[in-house]
Length: 128
Image (cartoon, rainbow, N blue to C red; front, side):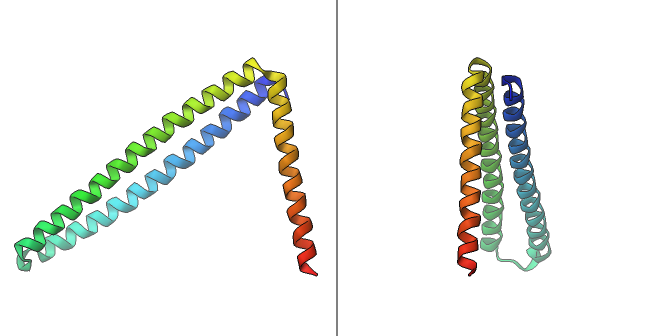
């Protein structure tokens, strides 16, 4: 594994993680918007018979829900920036320290293999 391959692997992994985070935030936002639209529709239907205090509370609840969505979007943006910075730093490290990067990757791979092997062995012992 050369430094370019390691950098590409790190970049691809960070891109995939970022895409997954963006999809999760998008799904959450879509679900919340649908829920808000349904709630807003119900409020409109009941508006004729709703007490003004209840109407005010519903408006505040919608406002708070929209603020929550904005906060979630800001958190996604911060996470995206942080992940991009980490990916850049990783790529620079791999480019600057190719041999060390390969050794670290090999050690991590060996550690993961050891954990998997240990878990399988433990599971087989508990089976009998």
